[in-house]
Amino acid sequence: MVSSPPTASPAIASTAEPVHAGDQIDAIRRGAPVNQEIAAPLMARVENADIKRVRAYPMQPPTIPHSIDNYQIDKNSNRCLLCHARANADKFQAPPVSVTHYMDRNDQFLATISPRRYFCNQCHVVQTDAKPLVANNFKDIDSILSEEHDKKAN
Ligand code: HEC
Ligand code: HEC
Image (tube, rainbow, N blue to C red; front, side, top):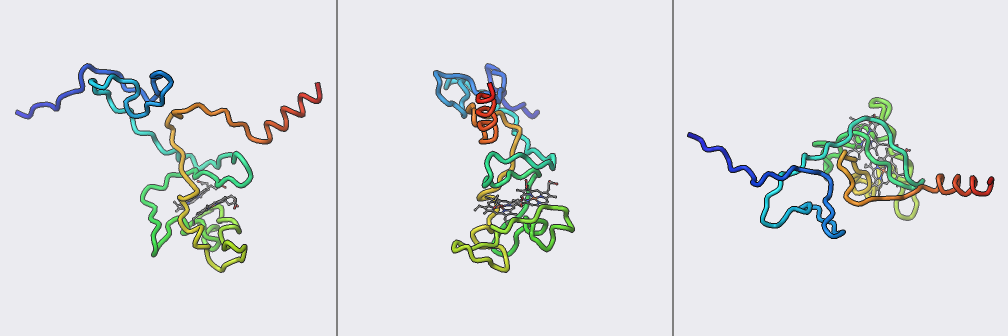
């Protein structure tokens, strides 16, 4: 007879939300006492809606609106460029990388992607549906300007 694996006891509900433990960020134990095992939260899912997201400021590298599982980037091949290279963009209906991706550090334009822009994930990242661990009240410049404009108007 196969014995079932021991279940974590006492059962503490899994929660992706951080529990406030004296204002500390306790991302790993999530407030559970050290002698208790807590069920792991569900893994976050990569957002794959194919809808471009707003940029927080003009030079922000846009976040990736599709999943990139198993997209290989190494010395010999760059999966991202299959679709995002200027030459292929029409075939895949992908936005081609912008001109900055062809510039070296002296602002000279190269024929192919600049080595410093080769490893796309250095700057571009996917987003998941995970709940943020830390609150964020960032406002972009457009909302600040329109708030000031409204204040003056009153
Ligand atoms: C199979 C083709 C394909 C591959 C491979 C691919 N993309 Fe994309 N990408 C697209 C398409 C099409 C879009 C337009 C939005 C959409 O349909 O998802 C896009 C959108 C984007 C955007 C958003 C641009 C913007 O202006 O908001 C970024 C950033 C991006 N991709 C980065 C990457 C990176 C980094 C990789 C490699 C890890 C990659 N893509 C691989 C097809 C691809
Ligand atoms: C060093 C950081 C960096 C790297 C590496 C990088 N990018 Fe970007 N990318 C940016 C920034 C910043 C922007 C927005 C401003 C601009 O266009 O330069 C951008 C813009 C883009 C856009 C939107 C272009 C547009 O006109 O809207 C796409 C698509 C993109 N990158 C894809 C890629 C792909 C694919 C790679 C890998 C081959 C890559 N990037 C590598 C920083 C980077």
